[in-house]
Image 1 (cartoon, helix red, strand yellow):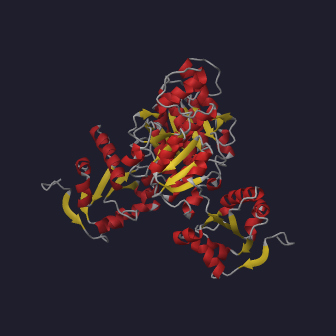
Image 2 (cartoon, rainbow over the protein chains, first blue to last red):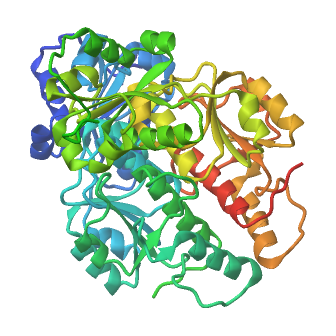
Image 3 (tube, chains in turn blue, cyan):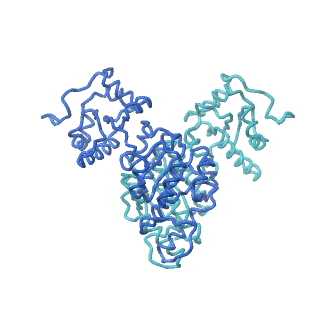
Length: 303
Length: 303
């Protein structure tokens, strides 16, 4: 920050400058993978990125925001972003430069270059998670982001994407997480059998969301509510309040036989109307909220 | 049908033919509004359209499918569609023609021209609905379709879109309903004050989904589960098992003050994690499923 109160005095105005081109390359996967960097666009995503960055830096850990590019108008509208960006490599840029950097049709005035966030499987499992969402071969960037945002809302402790899933650092995915990408740890590229084996070692139950599941989510919720509300100790098919990893499948095909095979149970989300199936985001929301509700009011149960 | 077992012998092969151009115009709103027709694309949507069509025709009512255009390959893969299309104006068409007609980048081999489906507000309210989803100023076609599909899955009796909402007959909306558009009655273009007044006359409660709501959905669910599971008659802030119209707001702004003002209660969906807010589809799913679960196992309660 300089005495004008604005990030570094240089106003980036050439959309064809080397620096600008280099940042813009992060809209593509090869550059992201090579540099382990991605773009967060818009006030909401950049705010959440900066909050995580400042928290990490304060804890003596490496930051996550490498560079910030913002228009003056955006900083005028969002003075908190200017505060949060203090101490980062922040630059003023013209709208033309921001349009060249960003992926959206309507540039939102601010873009951050962030370091990859994903951690190892052991790191999240060692933290004793109660609720984990596992996305198996999810292909649509928007869907992946939507489920991650729903998982965050449901208070999930982590999100795992298996090897053949969409790249969560894709700008469209990042956008649809609405900042949630910076809220909970993510693990990428792990095989579902590996996930299941590690969860089982730690007593974390594995439930597959599956339209043809032998257990009904409704029944599990009633059993859980019964224990909670009336102190009943009825036998249960599966205690929703226990630590659980939910497996969610591909949008079109659902979970594969191999993926279903590693689950402790297959659980059907009720369809009360005529809908043939549930949208991935809808199914994940119902399952994760069911677990969250059961867990909120119950002590930790671990197998 | 002719003796080859295929729809009318003429193979439409000229993507610039008048008939083809006329159908293609339905991708745009002016043609849709003028002709009160829209496009259903792909095997799933066309199947659901044809099922509704045949049911209506059998009941002596006007059909909903005016024309069907399909490739031979698609009918080979989906013989049930050929059966369902019997008695309709069905035509074989080349992939080029289908590409010219359809809105999707990858044509799905079959397109139906359907008549508008929306009905009047009184028609759905007179049927004594228990669960209604009201979309207020929802702007994204995919969101509107996703909520309609979730409403169908939750067994809602009707979906209402207020006047300034997106056009549900937009090809993108139709696609994201995954056939659910043909499953439950829809009402379009009604003012929210009008909806509220009519619902109140009929004893249908009005709940606004609102992040700042004074009632917590969690608490309402617990009260409802308590009544159901232990026969308690605890006082309740609002009985989720009663007939309810849920109001859902615009993706970015939520419900306006005017919209909130017509509701009996404002209900907050719990956010257990750090997410600032819920995606519209996620919020609607949680609310509608909460009502559906309460209603499934309870007798009709009407105020």
